[in-house]
Image (cartoon, rainbow, N blue to C red):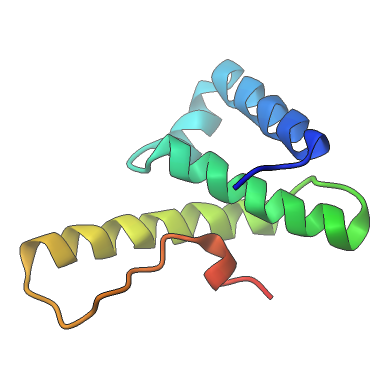
Length: 98
């Protein structure tokens, strides 16, 4: 997905913040795919920008993102270890957002 310049700037700001705050980085990025985290962060920021004119995520949105990515990872691991009848595994946060 391609993002607007405002969204890209916001993503870069979050990346810099996480790089300079190890505990926060560990909280949000340990055990998850960083690329998937920032892709979904951008999608939420895009929704916020379209609704409010500002891309910033709320604390609650960051928490939903963190938990969702942990769930995606858990599902992926379970699917790899077991046979499944499911063909589609949602790794896209928009699946959960209105």
